[in-house]
Image 1 (tube, rainbow, N blue to C red):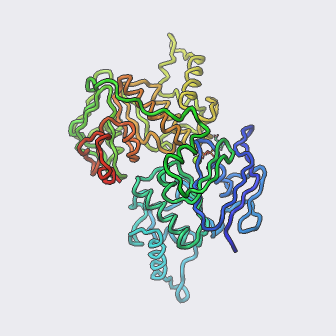
Image 2 (image 1 turned 90 degrees about the vertical axis):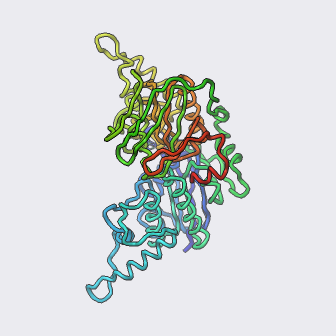
Length: 480
Ligand SMILES: Nc1ncnc2c1ncn2[C@@H]1O[C@H](COP(=O)(O)OP(=O)(O)OP(=O)(O)O)[C@@H](O)[C@H]1O
Ligand SMILES: [Mg+2]
């Protein structure tokens, strides 16, 4: 049987909201297709329909020529969502075999050797250099994703569908993953559909780029000959007004010191010495496990130093954008407005401690507009937003606190290209308004775009600071 996928006239609404307006898409065997488009465009919804999580309202799906309701629980189709479905407490072999009958040799004797050999072969297919007995909990997030891919391949998946699996990975792991997908397509003829906002990944591995916008397919073209600028043009063609907003240039030299870490240690971080002054953006990058986020938690005061000190200038409060919005980000069952205003309610308190509801509503609506949250409805439940739009709300919450110190972790994780630029512009505005900004991001492109000086965190320590514009290509390669 062939493994080509044909989608015709697919529609889907959530309540009165139409999210997919008749999607037609045909994907041939062996193609690597990048599915792109702004936050809230409907990419995950399309994939969740294929996965059987949501049911389409209309339209048809054909796989290998036959009509199907969805592609759930088929051995020849594998999905990678952000939740990988791996068990940390089990070894790689056991995870690969999870849910399958044990291999038997004679009668009740289990054939562990064969299981191990097959696991080793599966790991080789994704170029993962680990012993099959390793506990999954000891792997990095990128290695876990590769185990999930190995598991799909070991089960005979011929169509691999990957929704933003790289957005939480450091650059090196993200490249390993997309390269493994590409190799499977080239060497084994598998078909790959991958959702990503990262241009470099899309350009590196895809044969074809499909762009969704507001539930409609607005571009579908070969990736051959497509370069970075052409892809940006394709993505922002429909968002002209967002096209030329880059971070504002530095206007004034930094002022007084607002935040200082003195040989501070907590979690995996330390000892860290670091100063951030009013009117400057300091960037830190590093691999997972380096203690990068612990430095951020220390700076914000979410982690107490077990030795050393964290000193903030008198009256200099700090606001934090946490790194994992899915777990630490917001309250799913509450309105977007409440999620925006919850940590700054004092702003809207009248005398006698009454809340000025009208002002709160007006300001929340303005923030939704300023950050282009989509849908632009502050009454919508946070849990119903797409991944990138959740990120914008978490960012907006920090802005409402209007502190003098900002600690922004992974500020652009999962956001689309125009919004990424918008966030860079906002960070520039915070600096120009006199705030001390610490941007902590495993995506060093963020730092190249916004930071006035940047350093790498390794083994809990902050390395020497560099000015991004002074970095050569070789310096940049060393970051990956
Ligand atoms: N369970 C749900 N209930 C109501 N609306 C939803 C639900 N899931 C998604 N939506 C809405 O459907 C639209 C498309 O969301 P979807 O998650 O498909 O976007 P996306 O293209 O994956 O965006 P992102 O790049 O941010 O992940 C959004 O407007 C979102 O708010
Ligand atoms: Mg999505």
